[in-house]
Length: 456
Ligand code: GCO
Image (cartoon, rainbow, N blue to C red; front, side, top):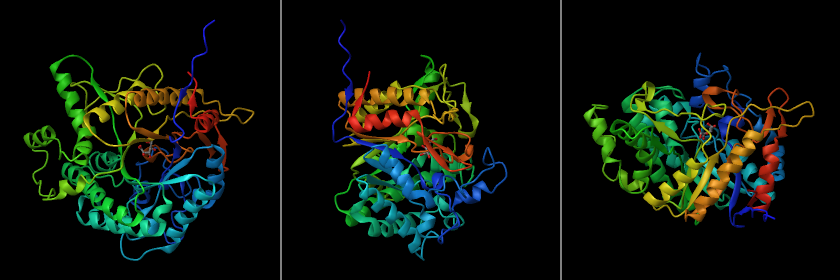
């Protein structure tokens, strides 16, 4: 008789978490002195959000935070990654501090610790104070020092109670979607704004790292990148070239400077050959050294891969890309490709020497709602998480220093330009009643977090 296959096991030290972000779940956008963010402004513009929604209520987490911490506790995870809304701390981005904002996040951190859950904080998950955007936002170098000051204020309040500090979430999204193709706030479409904002995001990270360390001691500090492993669609020279460009645009533009290699030369040469921008003076002496401050971990958000064809250029991003979704794409149209998380993790480990890696986001959007018994049978999401976690296990076996995994997301929430139309949560949110309903995938993930085991 065949022996039952042994489960895949992760060490007791492995971090099992769930993740959210401030603008996507909190609501209370005008409460307790919070200043406007670029996303409040963006949502108010006609046609920017698919369902014409905004973050004014979202999941009402600002008021339901205690029940949500109980919900997280019920999932038996040992960590929770959330982000801090800069406009709650500094309504104008700098100057006057709003203590009610700091109080909220202190309640959150202490509530997590009381429940024996490690708080992981993302300092910037896209909700820039509008007042700073009015002064140029991430295109202006002034924002760098404002981010460092904001970081100092938060660290001085929350200090060493935070288990992991993430400076930025996905600088690629903040710069490309926010300043190149305008799909995200602040909705700018400009090549110079793209590259200057990407630089200032990275520079603000580099300048913030020593400030965090000086205040919080040996708590790990890192940054989260959304990375996309890609392959050429054919063996043609043109597709190989297009794939190299995609990889440089999406991945290496951020990985290389963080790893102390400066910006990828091939991308610089492409941009200069195309006269992409005229003025490169935003990169000043010492900047690249500052950006390459050693970090304790790299956070990686993985969702799917890219299959690159030279004849398919995404005009908005001037980017040759085509994702050939397989038979069952997620509601985002993204291919379900678990092998991609293995390929990505092993590539990053082989090409760079980050001493620790966390998957800070991985998950899938499926609209599955509760049946007549109130049960959410989200089998596709359960399979997605299962298959990607097995690929993560294989990556660890291959020597990748993968030390944790955060499922995106704890609960359905505001999916940026898609509004509330896309549901990534392992917990269902009824936006009419704000009822939370753990989906079947949450019950499956709870068992994984509890046992550290994944069945074959
Ligand atoms: C991101 C953001 C999340 C998204 C999630 C699904 O990675 O884009 O960190 O806020 O909601 O990734 O798109």
